[in-house]
Every structure is written in structure tokens, then in C-alpha cells.
Image 1 (cartoon, rainbow, N blue to C red):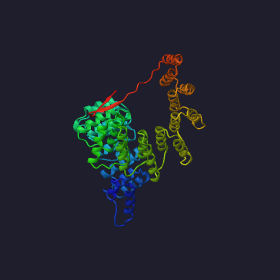
Image 2: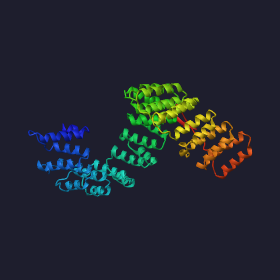
Image 3: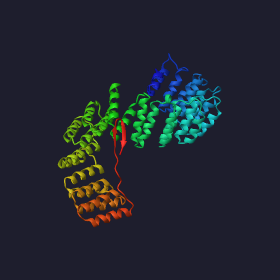
Image 4: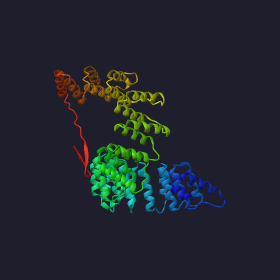
Length: 482
């Protein structure tokens, strides 16, 4: 029972049961008991209890049992008492490879990598665990050259060895080096961890196309994706509009009977919605049994983006009945609905509701949404007043609010308001090329060509240019950029 609790991550129960054992006159611990009790102490960092157990080891005449001694080294190392671990290690007469590995592992886990290397050099016989442990230690402290040197010397590398090196390069953002290792890694050693490491690295850099390329290799290798894989790939599909690959993922989920929890369900919702299939996104959302606030946020925002205002409001009503804790993102979604549909009165009501009834302080995004809503309703003065209001005045570092006012002023050819917005934008960011471009277009549309030329000349003087947009689309499973 003690072993069962210790191995099933219920260490408190293991320690409680051990205490009951000590209080029972008909039972007592033996050499098989102590290693699992010490493991339980390690898991909860029970330092004082661990010391007491060490005392009981002496009391029961087991201080020279190698299995128990190795467990003591692990316990003290896990609790950060590396000095105590060294004392136990130094008193062992017949050290085995487990003793050495336990000591080296304890040293490198606490950051004493060079000390671990010195102990490594003293070993006459090293196992794969020994090599991998030290390589991992160097990787964790960012010494990849030293880790690479050990890796190159190592004979009989396994998947852990390769994955550790890939993880090191990924952690430092060196994706080209990580890809080099990935390509050199023997095909049969690649596992789900290998692919997830690469996918995670590309996800951190927003390289969604590379994520799908790695996933294709994963499918060729017939390696079953984990939940992390599925969420990451679906996110990449969302950004790239790769509906075909997203559909493959959904088919895989259904075929293998994978439970669609809130995180995975939200990723599916995002993918279908961003690929233009809001009906399928809504269907997936309704199939999620336990929805968290992220799932509600996602569907409300996506319904808003697709112009399904009434459906979004209905979902919000369902959310209120579910007693889910509301946050600012929910109201941002509702304000987006109002902005897309031009529902000014409803937008004002939600904006007021979030602070007065739910105690949520509007953030710059909420103000930006309201400003955009008011601007597109030709209520430019009201939008300006909202930006200049006492609370929003603390957020004047927000370029989007002034950008919205400038953009709509250009559409409505309102020169006075456009100049007012551009003045504030350029105070915040004098090198905003888009601001100069919009202002120049405003003057041109109003027939003020001399002013438009002045703005363009100033733009050239500053060495600015408008950043071109880019997009991508999927054709026969291939993602093309343009």
C-alpha cells in the first residue's frame, strides 16, 4: 500500500500509512519499506520527516543496505540538501551505477553541473542514464557547447539523448540548430516528444507553416499526436487557414474517441471559425461538455467576427445561466459584436454593465472597441470625448484608439478630426508610417494636394514606408504565402 501511494503520486497517504505501521505492534518496516517512504518524502519535500526516517533506518539496522542508501541520496538531493546526500554517498563501501547516477543527478538538478562532471569523470562504468543526466544538466544551464561535446562522445545514444539536445536548442530559440538535430536523428528514435519539441519551438516564434510541415512528418512516421500536438497544430491551421489539415485532426479525434475537453474544443472552434466555417465552430462548441471561460470567449468573439450578433448574445445569455465567472475578454467580444453590427446603444450598455454590475475595469481594448463603434456611427465628437475622458486619459499610449479615430475621419473626409487624431498618434509614435499614409490620403481625398505632398515628403525625410500586408491560403494541402 505504501509503494502504491508513493508511485501513484499520493505521497501524503504513503507517509500517513507508514506512521500507522510504526504505531502497529504487529508490524514494522523492512528494507523494502524505506525506499518508498523516502520517495514519498522526496515528492513533498518533507525534509524533517525524511531525517526522521533516516534515523529509523539506523534503528532498524539498514544503514548499510545499498537500496536504502541510494534512496537516501535521492531524498536529500530532491530536498536540496546536497551536502547530506554527499555524506551518505561517501559512506557507501560498494558503490553501484545507481549510486553514482543518483549523486550526479542530484548535483546537476541543483545547478552543480561542474561538480557533476567531476563525479562523472571518476566513474569507471557509465550507463546511458549517466550520460543523459549530465547532458541534461548542461542543457538546463544553457551550456550547449559542453552538452554537444558530451553528446558527440556518447556511444549508443537513445531518443532521450537526442530529445535533450533538441530541447536545449529550442529553449534558446535556436530553431535552425534544433531542426538540424531533428533531421539527423535516426527515424526510428523519433517519438511524440521529439515532434512536440519542434512544434513548441516553432509555435513560440509564430512559424505556423513549419508546424504543419513537422506535423506532416509526424503523420508519415505514424506517431500518435498528443493533446499538446493537436492544440498546437489546430492553432497553426487557424492562422494559415489550413482547413483540410484541421479537418484531418478532427477526424483523428473522432476516430480515436478522444475526449474533447475545453482546451481542445476551443482550438477546434478557433480553427473552423478562422477558416470560414462558423457553423462547424458552433457545432463543436455545443459538443463541449465542460466549458471554461476560454471556450465561451472564443465562440462569442468568432460569432462577432462573422456578423452573427444575435447568436453571440444568445450564447452570452447561456453563459450567464451557467454561472461561469465573467472576465473582460467576454465583454470585449460583446463589444465586438456591437461594433460589427453598428449597435451603438447595446455597446454603451455592455460597456457600462461591465464596470457597474460586474466590477470589471475597462482596459484599453474595451475603449478602443467603443471608439471604433462610435466612429463608424459617425459620432466622432463622442469618440473623441471618450478618449479624453478621465479614465481613458491614462491610456493615451493606445495607438489603436487614435488610429480608429483617424481611419474613420479619413473615410468621412473629416479633416479637423483627422488632424486631431494624427497629432496624438505622432506624439505617441513619430515613426508610424501608416499614420502618415492615412493622413496623406485624407488630404488627397479632400483635394488638399499640397498638404498631402508635404506629408509624403516628411515621410520620405523620416525614411518611413507603409508596411505591406501578407496572407496565406491552402491549396491541396499545401500552404502558400502571398
